[in-house]
Image (tube, protein in one colour):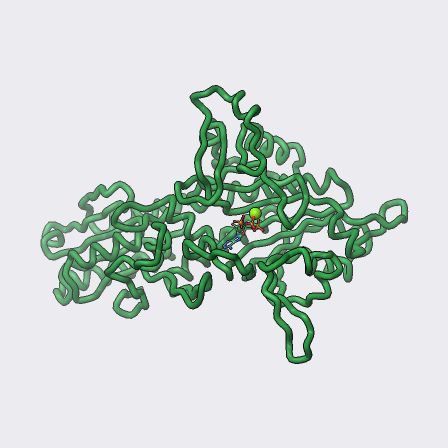
Length: 445
Ligand code: ATP
Ligand code: MG
């Protein structure tokens, strides 16, 4: 993309109403625009990042054997009356009535709807196990929407639902979700720690939340610092291997890590003192096993192997896709702006032309641009007629991991400058070597 043709409405001033750094930087970098409290438009560059996160989530869910679909945002209140949650959910539910006076709502989550789909189409244990998921907008009329997309009212969530015959199968589904979530966050360049949590209105007492440590997080967390040494890495995973998924769950959840809702001071004090941590975290996902809570209330049964009807075992599993954009920035920025991890960056590399209009510099930038696109990479070329300082400030603000600077002086010696946004380190290289180096970094992801 040529910046002169793009829509990147960066702000020079710090927006006064943004309290935390991710919200400030998303507004300044022209990623979002607030349309009402807790409701945002995703401007092109924000949308690009959102889509990248969605893609990672999709790829990892499909890899785990889970099946994508799409349910609507608007739901009929009747389904929620069946589960009893129409009254229980309270003021966070946005209730609407249509022109016929029928009670509708904007879905805050989809347990009821997916259970309805299941009971309409599945009647035999032979169709199990089954895990369906979608990535769809949710609405929760949060009392205090704040921090930009981190606590919005309308937000994008991946929510998946498993249906199993036995408790053991449902726990395996739970473990598959834990493993696939660990992989997803790691691909995004984030460490999200699974912590024992509380069921809340979804219900169920077997649940973990995934937390990204950050000072601005809304949850208070207590953990053994040894959990921060765990990484998923590139280990091979067989999602049908029950023992392997169970052992990964144990590896990642056996050390103490809890939110304040389930914190146990006595257990915490058993951790060696130098490893005890009290910190704050951002919840970027949660997995639940809740057994037959919805299937019994809504009559979702299957015919078991002995011919008798059994209520199906269920769990639900969510990732806060739009919140993750904010969480990523909280975890990756400096005083100049965002620093995108390579796995989620909106553009792979920035090209800065120091002397727009200079034939040689223009031609070198065009050639770089072509080389990157031919390799399937997505460069952002700052071809505007602006001073170098302004171009650098924009690149630093929007946080592309790699920048190539092209100017007449370097070109005389046959080199361009390749700069790493995170380390700030620059090196001079012939253009084709700079391209090769950047391409190799992305090829290794
Ligand atoms: P919270 O405790 O932050 O209100 P929750 O536990 O009610 O969240 P879940 O029902 O577990 O949320 O939803 C799954 C994920 O969706 C959460 O882990 C979080 O990342 C995201 N999420 C929930 N509420 C919001 C919101 N208001 N804005 C943005 N993302 C949200
Ligand atoms: Mg939650």
